[in-house]
Each structure stands twice: as structure tokens, then as C-alpha cells.
Length: 163
Image (cartoon, rainbow, N blue to C red; front, side, top):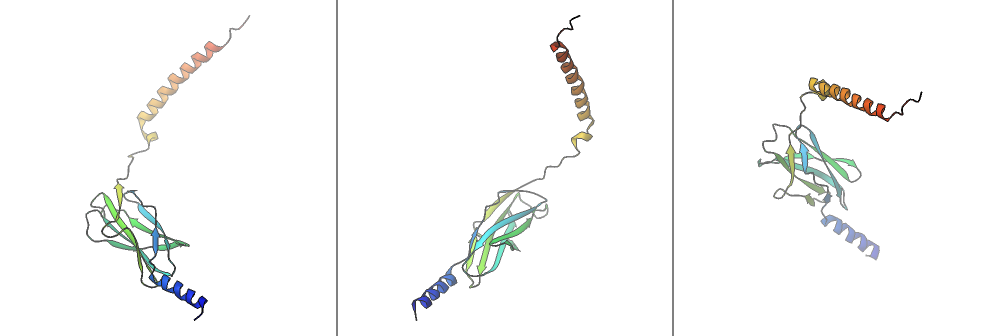
């Protein structure tokens, strides 16, 4: 066996024993009734077989599994639906697991130590401000008094008319 063959064999053995590396910017807050996207970069020496996002509402014991789809190159994406029914608590816990061609498993977060997302209520405005009569009353009063005050100041700045 020659040196190039040994190097190739060593690289293959190394690839067979190295788990996928998953990196992402943890999501810390989200708004209820919206879909939350989680992005990750996954790298490995061998082909990736699967990347899954595991999530659960705070206080629940079972995780839901969402397959992460390849978005571009090494980037993967999955969405967590944040519905009122699925969120008994005020947050979501999640982690990711990747498996390569040789069955090696890589994690970002774990079932025991997941990432946490604080889920906030969506702020609802009952009606646009311009539909409120008090908005227009204030606007008109401000326009009248502000306009009058400006006019007085303008007249005071004028030079007297020499005649």
C-alpha cells in the first residue's frame, strides 16, 4: 500500500467518525400567531442524511419533530408554528440534530439542555389612529393655534412699510 492510498484511507476513517457540526444564531424572542424560522449552518466531511429541529411548548414533555430543508449550500431552515393552542406556556424550547451518511449524530442544543424562545403576545391595535375623532380634533386645534402663532411671529418680523 502506497502513501497516497494510506492518506485516502485515513481521511475516510476520519470522515466515518466525525459527527456533523451544527451552528446557528439562537432565536431568543418571537411573536405568537406567526411562523418562526430557525436557520442553521451544517457541515460534515460526509454527506448529510438528515437535519431535524425538535421543539416543544414550555411545560410539555414531548418534542415535535420538523425536518430542516436545505436552503442554500450548507444552510438549512425549519419553521416552528407559534399558535395559541400549541403554546400553553409562554415559551418554546428547541434543539437540532444532524445525521451524516455514516450514522454520526451532531447536535446544537440537546433534549436535556435545549434553547429557549420567549413567546410574546401580538400587539393588536383596535383601529387606525386616523379613524379616531379625537386625533382629528387635536390635529385641527394644533393646526389652528400653531398656524395663528406662526402668522403673528411672521408679521412681527416684517419691516415697517416706509411711506
